[in-house]
Image 1 (cartoon, one colour):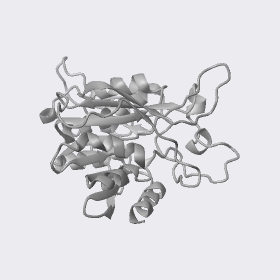
Image 2: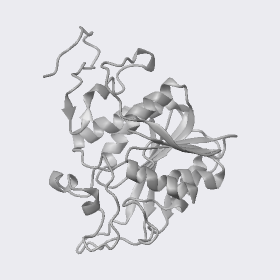
Image 3: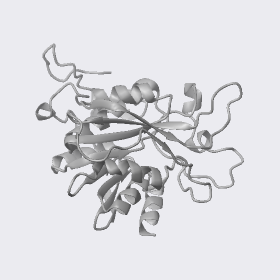
Amino acid sequence: MIRIRRRLPRSTLVPYLEQNYILSGIPLAYVRDIGFLRASERKEITTRKESKVRTIYKSKNQSLIQGDALEVLPRLCRRGEKFHAVITDPPYSSGGLHMSTRAAATSSKYQSSDAKKKHPDFLGDNRDQRSYLAWSTMWLSYCHELLVDRGIVCLFSDWRQLPTVSDALQGAGFIWQGIASWDKVNARPKLGGFRQQCEFIVWGSKGKSPGVGTSLPGSFRISLVSGAKRVHAAQKPVELISEVCRCTMHHDEPKILDPFAGSGTTLLAARSHGIQAVGVEQSPEIAALAVNRLKN
């Protein structure tokens, strides 16, 4: 049952929801405003026992936090942290045309059944379309608060989620600036149709675009990470993320946030440029893989 906890003005479109009400895995205690209230008006509507959040790796310029992004990002907001860019590869909740396929484990959706090396399943990849939009808008709203004015957000997406991601970006308060493509070079053939060999970078800005710095290409032709080097089922090439990181190079001391760090590729790419970066990863198993890559 959903119960309104106090009388709200008709113009306020924010339901106050029971702590134990769940929508496709999203605790709706997190649903505060989804962009309908200004930051100064936001309030926590229920108390909730948070899972263990801890920093598991820290160097001069990089740090990795293990925890749910929807728990970590509000903490960063309360601490007054600021970033120049959000560069992240969130779970797509895709991998199929129908909900039954999307609900499958990531190890079966993104790896062939005869693969010699099985990668650990990653979390948050089985939401339906409505909950994916709500969830994406939630964490992007926190990112909007964490970015400096004219900061940049770059989100990876496949073709299925492209419309939803662009909606979530704008719903969180960003100005949608465009799309870049990643040509993966090799992709599964589709008889009678086109190879699905591109993924996309949906990008936007907090307020106006920077208007300074490097002009980056609108398409990147970079091969997938080979099976022998891959430790994550959806791992992006460091070379690709390194190119995307160049959007921050006009700042004196740029700082990047990756709320879905996975195996740590964004942190590695940022390190190659001498850029500060903070990553967040929920899965303990995958976070351990990221730490191993960062240490080696």
